[in-house]
Image 1 (cartoon, one colour):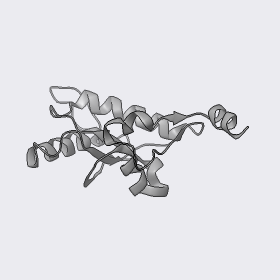
Image 2 (tube, rainbow, N blue to C red; image 1 turned 120 degrees about the horizontal axis):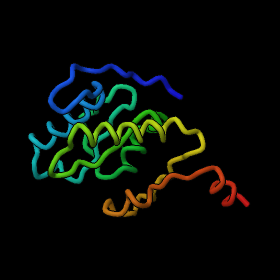
Image 3 (cartoon, rainbow, N blue to C red; image 1 turned 180 degrees about the vertical axis):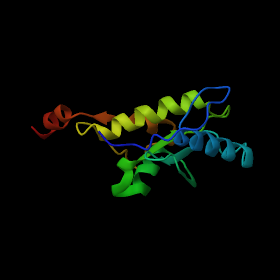
Length: 137
C-alpha cells in the first residue's frame, strides 16, 4: 500500500480533515466561484498524494486519463457538481480513489473518443484481471 501524505490540520467545526481533502474542496469552490455556469459537470484532476489540483477543467473522465498519460494512476478525477463539495464527500472520494490506485488487480478502461461526455463516466469502468483473461481467450 502506498504511503500517502496524511498531514492534518487543526480540527474545525466540521472535524479533522487532511490537507489533501481541503485542497480538493478549495479547488472545486474556486472553479464554481470563477465560472458558475461553465464549471458544473466538468471534470477536475487532482493528485492522489497531496490533493493538488491542476487548473484545467476537462469534458470527461477519459479526457483526464488521456491527458495524464502514463501518470494517470497517480491522479484522481471528479465531476464538479453545481452545489459544490463538502469536506466529508471529498475525504470519502479521495479515500476510494487511493484504494483503487493501490489495487494492482484493477485497471481503468479508456473510452472511445466518440462516446458522449454524458455517458463517458459509465463506460469508463474498472476491470479486474479475470475480465482481462476472459477477453484474451
